[in-house]
Length: 373
Image 1: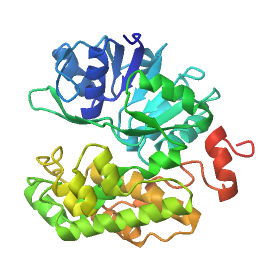
Image 2: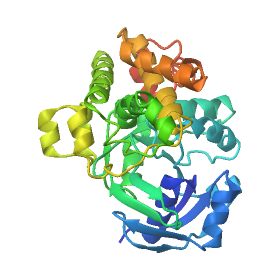
Image 3: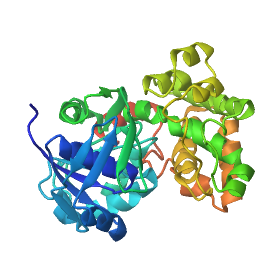
């Protein structure tokens, strides 16, 4: 029997509600916070969250539902940010003046560079305490809020890459997170979890190369299944080759997309043997019936380009590796959405890596600082 803990879940979207319900049903004292009053009102009006599917079945009564961030985190044994990575900067600014010294933070997920940006932004906003921040490479749950209000979880990731920044706290934080998520698997650094961001490999080609279909139907097609044609699959494979090349140049272990997709429980062994994204997506039972987004004003572009492809391309610059397919998708996304993702996305400066050379990188990842910074 695990000891009951107090957990602040920040975010009340699909993943946040799944986490709040799952952790509450496991006996923990959950405090749910959201910047959206409507999201909290939805939970309060139902006096809790109904959970169905792979994470279990039941109705979770949430101990505290609050729009007060200070109330949510005060004395919490763990702060879980279950939010899009595009929101990390804002949450770091909000947390900097109220975060307790050494209070553990879990970014679920951190995706690519999330922990680096979050810690950098905490410090830029005046936080002087010891930072204990950790991240998963992807969201723990494959889930959606249903029209009825319940949260359906169709998959729980069985093997979850996990790392800490600063890395010196990794073993301590890994032991803590195992109580909540036994699937977390400790990696050497947040670069390793950053390269394991599967969403950034697949979503930009799937969304951008189907933009006409997506906008015409408002997403009324099977995004992963129908949207991954052989040519889209080849674009995903090209992004993956570039990602792997940058990882190798930075001496970071990383699995090919199809193997990692299989390890995450999303495809079959036969797809691994085939080795192509097209086969992997067509044999992905958990994603088979997921529809597309209604427009490109969506995290599949904002998050997976700006906070996926952009930091990988920046790491490529740091390592001297060209990323032409990623660069092209970043440019296409910027044109069609009228935004400059290369500027507003996760740059080396935003991740605290500007001016750090390859010889300094390992020390920076371990200590969280470099040369007194």
